[in-house]
Length: 112
Length: 111
Image (cartoon, rainbow over all chains, first blue to last red; front, side, top):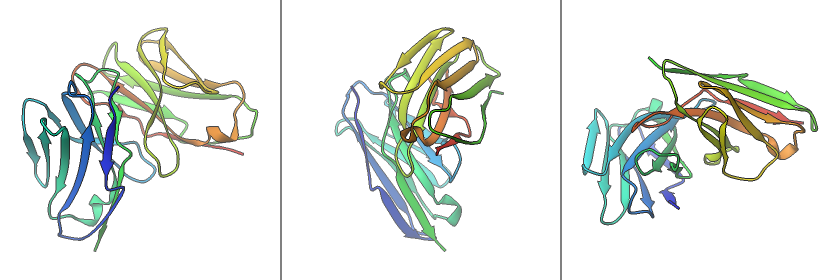
């Protein structure tokens, strides 16, 4: 089955800097890659996703890149703000079936 | 629009007591439903998923069970809680080729 690895487990940046979180996956058949943001005491919220037919997707200050050959994808947050502080999870699945596998999470801290 | 409701938000239960957590989805039909557990500071562990009424698949053997008595209702249960059942329980739904939508979670503490 699919195995998703996520790095780093913790990340601390200064406000205004960029943050990058990286994930690798094992199943070359995976074609859907969502990212979730989980604030303290809340459920994860989908913030951006990418499908295997594109290499990059942007939404304001966040972007995701996908390298299918290397089987890795990354989340990029620019101009970080304190409210970006949260735990971020990557995931991979085949057509969003019941095989979604999540990374272990990255705790991002943005220091003002 | 679709919404997912999960309750209670917090629960403190003694060891050996029963458990019932409920999750309901509004605004969609025939969703896939999921129960996840998240230990403190850890990732998401899939416990159960359901593709239809009465259809439950279990990912890991454990002290818990799940039921889907109605199309948009998913229940997580236990007959006798263990200390190790403590954690943050999340319900989620999906339909079609879109990401999962999670509920707000239930923090369960077994004492």
